Image 1 (cartoon, helix red, strand yellow):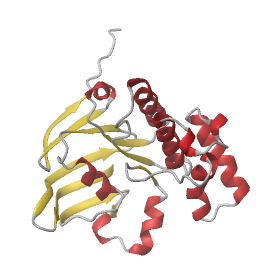
Image 2 (image 1 turned 120 degrees about the horizontal axis):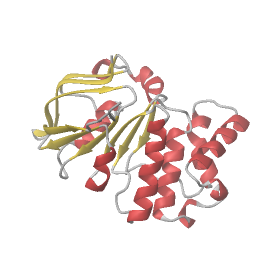
Image 3 (image 1 turned 180 degrees about the vertical axis):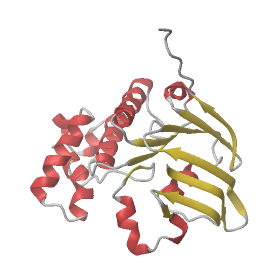
Length: 229
């Protein structure tokens, strides 16, 4: 059974701007999927539909069996607890420490402060930034800030990570560290859907979905070969 399912999905914005057109796509549990294509191809919209930030104009999007188009507001927190969201517009809070930023998703859902801090420290350790827990976010490099955003996204142990251009504007070394961090979570069984302009990373994907003008133009799946006995 697919963890994420798009069935003939269209998404239009005011002014008849078509962001997605007739998109059908199945993503299995534990897959690592990269969304590729030019700016404006529909990659961000596709991710926002999975997270129920946007709703389809027509067609159906199912996440863990839930129809996103019919999901009521009361069901959004339950859906989002299963998702780790890394979107470009989600910035770190500059008036809080790195640790406090990572604790925030747990605090707002009612976790005890001690438990939230314990899990936040563990998440920072996973991305190699526990030593910067007390630091102000603005004192970190761009790559370090992005890894803090990843720690914040995974602190509640999501089933799915959605990342929108997580390496944008980073140097190669920082970008490699961010992608390696996401691959580590995929290796632990987390489903990862990542949009990127950087073809340097596509060879590591289970599958690459190329979007162009809101449509799936091409898909590529990594071929695995077995050694002869």
